[in-house]
Length: 280
Length: 299
Image (cartoon, rainbow over all chains, first blue to last red; front, top):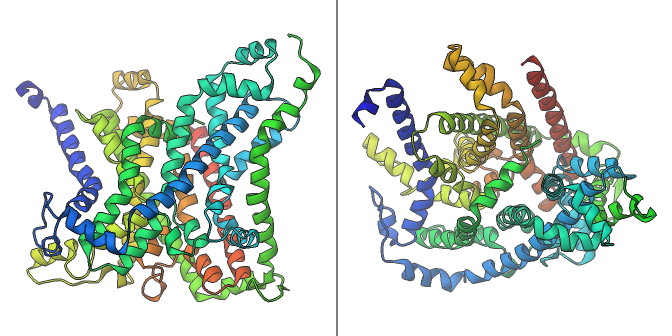
């Protein structure tokens, strides 16, 4: 260690590494403090210096939010949206990505690929207003349908699965399936899907987390407070109960827990999902 | 070439696999976008009969001082947040890749955690820390200066924008860092070895080797930040509780669009604004493509 310290380059690197650790605190401390404040009384939260370790008020604070804001309701609402949308999006994207990867060169292939790619540059805000009107004609306002069905067609998802399937499934496999008289759809379900499970998981985690965090679309289509998803419900709570900081922090914490559990279980797939876009 | 049945050679299977995507996409993306073009040239509140007004909505928007302010706010927030986020992320990625002595896996995860937090929820947390009365930041300032401070950050016309930018930096730095790290790891090590043997300085290595080879990742990251930045809505909306701050100091184009459509029910004007956003996105994307292609060529 002493010899390492004498090396000028190593010393410099050590300083940089410690600097990054200090910087990283800036990224986690707000989350840590959210958790600490959620377990403290109101006066404790407004002390200076602020408490840096957990208190014992968790259940007391919970009983206060339980009365005005049963947190299981928005979590349940979010799950109703997130789960079917994710399953649909992943399957539809995988099927389309499989088609694009396997049938390169067929009539229409270039057009379909270019069109799907172009959708990535369409800002969602372009469709926001007409989409709202469309939903009102369908009678879908204030239901979960607008958040589930339309979002299943994702250009990002299709391009993602197209790249993934193209790089993980050799064409010989399709030829072998053809020899066995397996049709395009059967090949997809029995040959392709089992192989691309890691890719499905990566796209799935990314979809779950981004859908869980959606704010604008639910704000536009959901009018009734009992239908609010987690970010909407928390925003409302933080405005009506802004003076009760521990309660707001606890509710926030409860809204974050599902996402963090999922991330803890599947962080590798999540990161793989992030970098896939940068491949090309 | 092996024998293939006739049906399998045609376009049938390709279109078959694309059908679920295409049906939903046509119904819920293509139709609204076409409808949006129609809305843009009509005056309509959703109830009374729509009236064709030509390009009036587009000129109304340009003439509205709030719209012009929203354009300026959006550009301001987008520019500084993209600069700081990508700059910090690039610095961190290079440091982690080449200089960190330990904790590589820790750094990869820890900077990414804020991305899991919904923008709306991150804004709630930020509001708590910057509360005027008893917020952590005001107390810290009070402690340092010796005078109790009750500054109301969210009502300040100046500070609201840096707070929105701070929120973007906090949430997105980790994402860009992961993109840059993936880009850095794709650069072959022997280039660095060769440069080291030639005695090339560290700065030259970075500016002549790392940066040009990272150009595709940089372009991808900046384009993504721009797509998000030009449409920014959640962060300023929740930070200003939907009001846009004092004298619209934090009203972004996304918020302006939302307000015209869903509080004033001027759907035509809102649609016109969304086409302006679209034009900006397309222009920016093409610009980056040119710049990054140019950077790749001069290497």
